[in-house]
Image 1 (cartoon, rainbow, N blue to C red):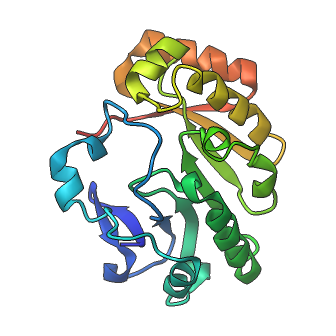
Image 2: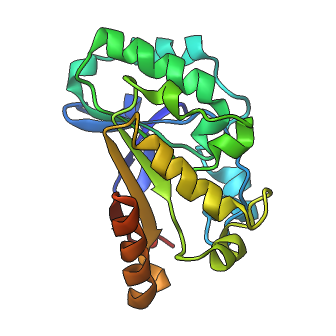
Length: 213
């Protein structure tokens, strides 16, 4: 499915909701991701075969917009680019879709959930392209240091990925009003405190997410 939301600890196509009032709508664009995180459910065979977010093919920009045109954007509390893969693998399409949505509803909050490695993926700084289109960017910090980050994410870009993610965070602050780094609560209170200190240094917010089996 392309447009979905979280409902009773599961994913549901928004077409199946009785009401869309104040719904948070997630946009699923790709299965691709440069990481193979040890804690990510996408790594299990069961998820790859049966999870409804797995895309048989990537939807075009036109197909995504056609899905949005079925609904009243005024009902939505927020639109979030976040699916089975890394949304900024398709940064040009994310920017185009967000721009079109803003034309229809300028005050629509738009967020990207990302691993923060887009500049490595595309070999350029993509953060200026987010200006005026993205209101919040939520970046997976995962760990307080490069070694543990690489062990957890198994990024194809290697151990340098950690610093690249931090650099992306700082660059994003110039163009996106709200920049958030996230960790999962299973890393423990000591490492969470270290991550908080890092966020304080960078001048961004830390959000601790609950681990979901």
